[in-house]
Image (tube, rainbow, N blue to C red; front, side):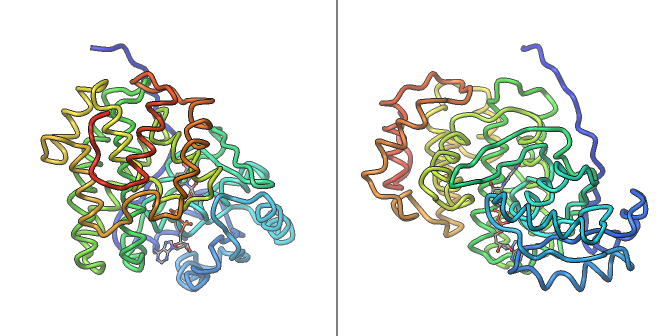
Length: 354
Ligand code: NAD
């Protein structure tokens, strides 16, 4: 039994199939007539469907969203927003596009409608990571939280299997770490366990048939819950390591989460028996860390930091950086333990007790 604080974040979520059709109503609700649409260059083709759904409420389209929200891209998008005299932001895409929407909301005060198309979960959080001159800084601010989120399962059907696997495991990491967050609460515990269950069931079915709408629904449902977890409680060892590996060694975001998660959990396992019990139940496994490693393999996801291009010689420096400013973690961490974890994650074999 543990005292807790529970505060819910003010957000409106539409979830289902074909829900993009409700975009016009959502823009009407927030009084928007001239929204700026944001996408990546790769998803510029979404614009026609979004414009159709918005019923004449899209004033322009900025198709330059990029990974890790570079401030130069945000500046260019802000100039476009001002030129068009836009009154709202519609971000349609993965975490990179949602990040650009948040960066613009912070600079302009405009309301956001997020239309997520991956499992990253950024749309449910008041968190933004921005990059300038090769450095990533992260902030948490209530103004960053999108007020409206439209989850349309149909928009995820085009997410390639490889990306679906790693993006889904990125979501899984949010839920896993929420289960042992220092500031967790009973509501988040329930959501996190259900998220793990939904992702573990949905992702293999998505990989078996990326057009399976029911599987896509289940995976997106799990990702939504995981996003709520990430937005509500603090993260620990796993997220810290991923931020170090992404920020200082330029490893790809979702892939890194997917590789590191089983090892971070194996490391924390002795300190978090209740979380391990919930995870074991959700994954239907005696050892949740092993089960996550096996799930990654089953999804055909990359195994090991070596496979992501990290040279073994980088591990010492990664351990140094991770040890410098550790996030709050249930198990006390020191450099030798971090290095042992990183060595296991580098090789990519099944996790061993640490
Ligand atoms: P992403 O947004 O970079 O998307 C990867 C690629 O997939 C892009 O080319 C994109 O256009 C394409 N894509 C996305 N959805 C698609 C679909 N349905 N069909 C076809 N192609 C599609 O990747 P991501 O993993 O979603 O996001 C990663 C970024 O999000 C990172 O910068 C990370 O830091 C950030 N993030 C932030 C938070 C937060 O709370 N602030 C949470 C998670 C991730």
